[in-house]
Length: 108
View (cartoon, rainbow, N blue to C red):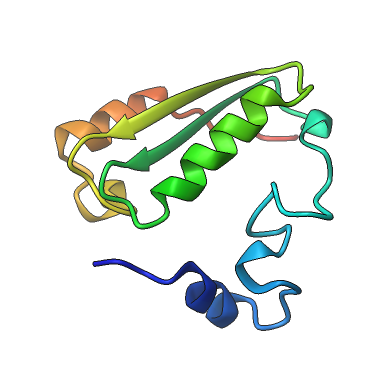
């Protein structure tokens, strides 16, 4: 099922300036802080092959890797999967592969 990113963002954050291109939703939008200022050293950008937001994920990965950011960015596309598939089917092989690559870091 195709989703409309602008409608979802309008619902989630009605005060967003620029709708789906608000810098909180689209870090590559005009007026967003520069990607070179990212504090992390590594990131994993992932989507499902059938994810309605997949194009935005791919664009973000391209922007990060082309920026002056000094970290490393990995890309993972889970074949045949849609948006948040890992929540809906946490026991599937693709969800397990994704979770094996995800790390959560605390700032404490």
